[in-house]
Length: 309
Image (cartoon, rainbow, N blue to C red; front, side, top):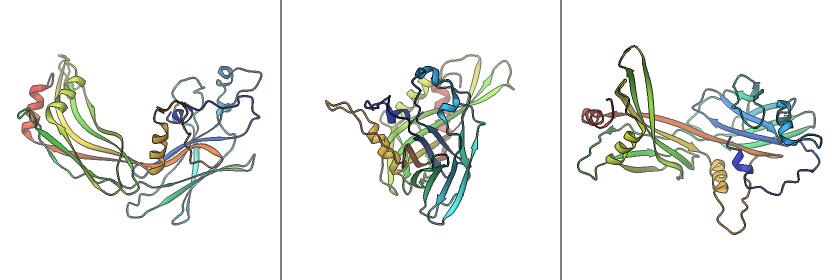
């Protein structure tokens, strides 16, 4: 869970302090997703009569017994009620996975307007509000390109070009190669597989500007060779390539920057949070995938260079 990074370097918690209800919030609005999910838990404190490991086995120790959760579009004052759901399984770990409560709602997509959303979590038992705000990240623009890979000349490159979205300050950029794998003994048995090549990871960009990255064809083909292993029981076929951009808002950029390793003598990082009365992050991201065209020579080249194609 990404919130782990928020606590990894904090070393001044008083474990015997009086109990206080503190919400731990993790939520990213993504207008390209049909449903928005917000994770809301409470800061865990075990009692003086049990160990941390013992208390961690009780799911209720991680969740509030009642919450009213809503998201408001501050530009239109439209309110979206978030409903609790328990249908998504939680990965096993130190804390109990017997319960996994998330809060979900649906938000309309509007790429033409600048929108600020406010998350309001109300805990009636203690009459406390936990709040956060974020500006919605809009769609990046990735023009469709014809991808041509060549091993000669040795310095041959192909281009990743995209225009950053409004309100997006940080990106992960990926090239996805997709292929079909068919069993030789049973041709009705097939599966589609993806190989993702990272062009940029948590890299800062200015919103609304065009950027270009070049990738060496030989480097990319070497990467595919390293990821696709020899398997003589399979026959493989190129399906396609696509460019993917994950954009993050200003709050996400702040959190990443503050979570970077501290190289000073005093090894202590500032904990980032934009949650009023709580800890965590309520932010926005955006996912965009654009299929590219591949020329026939590139398909033939991959057939020659990759195993079992």
